[in-house]
Image 1: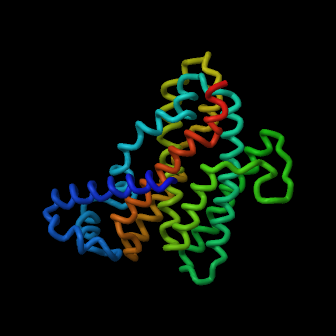
Image 2 (image 1 turned 90 degrees about the vertical axis):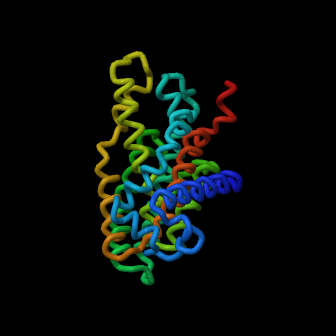
Length: 267
């Protein structure tokens, strides 16, 4: 994500937090109490909702941007350039492969809490399977390297770098950095199917049907972060919201540019 996008995201977070603090009567402590994982801000909100719901509810304003991206809008209207679609799918496969590698590194890190390492280990297979399935579908042969010989585009580099940096800084935040993909995907694909299921002329109708998600992975990850938050207070909610919105913006960037839109949109 570019510096300008990150700055705008941080500004939006600051405004959201101030508004929420004003509503809860703690505006005077906004500048001093947002550090640490069990601040008065976090404590007050924890009595009203759970962490996963909080970060989603305060990020839904980004949904219109997701719907207007090259990929999602193109699938919705059935006019997505096939070249963009093909490139996007391969980039998605590389993303899954890299995230599987990041989960593996986290699972093997002896300095990380065992509970986090166990969750990381359980997360590896799903991402690996997704990557292999996508590459196999496109008959891309494994070259023994990190990316099956497919050129890595900037949206994947930026997104996976963000996830890696978040994991290193505070390992439990790995669940937040990767939750945007799970939650947003479930939301978009199911709403897409409701719209296009009767539009048999839409060439991407089959893709939507095959890729719509029942939300089980998102629910499981949300439940885990909420449990860790309740039991161990591992999360600063203001930081969690900022991280989640950054992940959402990375998703939006991926939808817009993973298929190399500047190259194909003029065709």
